[in-house]
Image (cartoon, rainbow, N blue to C red; front, side):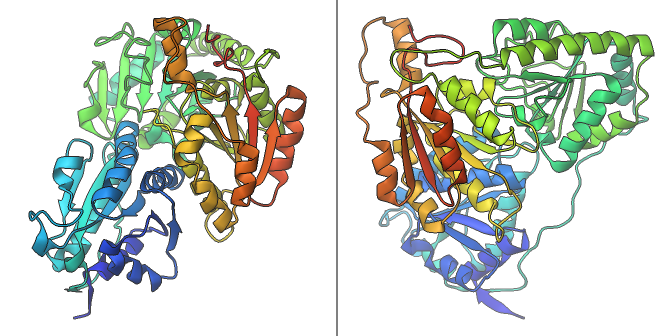
Length: 558
């Protein structure tokens, strides 16, 4: 029987599950894993500058590929730094596998040097936490970590790999990914007949599309089903790209700042079909977009994880099924009577026209810098809505959500929990996926980040330079932790403390890293700078001095 080290078995299992890229900060506790990757030509190692960044990049990679992203970190300090990505993956229902090089098994509970109790640290965040205590189980536990991360409601898993166990021999073949399919709804089942009856009777049906329909098949089926049944379609938080924003059935997206007119419009729906979303507090604005726990309208909730059904919202019909398979079923269902479809189209058309009118940048000036809407509008014009846009956390992102119209295959990378620091690592991951040798995303990649987030994980600009990827980083520089400043001004007017920032010259900062650095202080310079950055054959940073008073697309700071 063939034999390899447990570390090699871990790597062989990753490869057998289609993992072609891992993100890491190297550590001595898992050198056996790195050595095995050295002999695995199809696996790319991205060496990051901070474990939080590596975790965020792996999380973004998961969103792009639909498979678990993989991050490797060293014991104690490395694992602690990566906790932010585990928290974000849990909140965003995204598959992430964190492999932690652990202290030697023989020394655990000593305590050993840099030892970490992975169960205590990650038990409340991850879907599963395991420690490899026998080399023979290396493949089994690695495969389990991937499978659990990807199944049901996706999320993070953590596998600790003690240094001494990794070097021991492990026999047998490495587990590989096996074919699986989500539960498809039975068209003859009573629940499906009830859905068909609800849909036939509805005059204002709203389909809410979440992360579990964000697949090639889901994206293909959504417009077919919307057109067939005359449905309004709304994406959930950070999922506005799941549906072409210029399609006449697009009604907007649900997020933490969903505006009053839109909440009222969605409240007029007489049927809500929620597909592949948990209907979490972010997407429902604290469970207020629809009445909780019993919505005013019938709710059809379809999600692969039965635990997500009825957790807050009580559905009229709850289906633990594959949402894409459910879309397939809807695509074969006979549409409603012509007069009903005509009524729906009128309502859907009004919704889309109002949403589209709100998304037109009308121009706005400020005395203290560029209003960021001008930057986003220019970016939309230059890319035709087809870029991969990675957004960090902050009020400046409201301009992206409002004025960037995702179409032509454009993708949005963001995390609903709102963790700062996601933007630059996410852009790095997307830029690597667009390389000819690494993936198929042959389109511009843009990171939109605030000055606070840029200096949290902006060191990954050095990684982007080292990898020679084309990545445009747009920094909204207003010298403040703007979102907190806005809350501060509302709660304690005129008593600003702890939110002012002293920033470097970001253009010079970029140049020092080896990237193209451009500084913008006026609106006239926005579009030329963006065009130059997008055309640049390598990483580029466009630092825009932005208005602090006009901090959000939905209102001034004071």
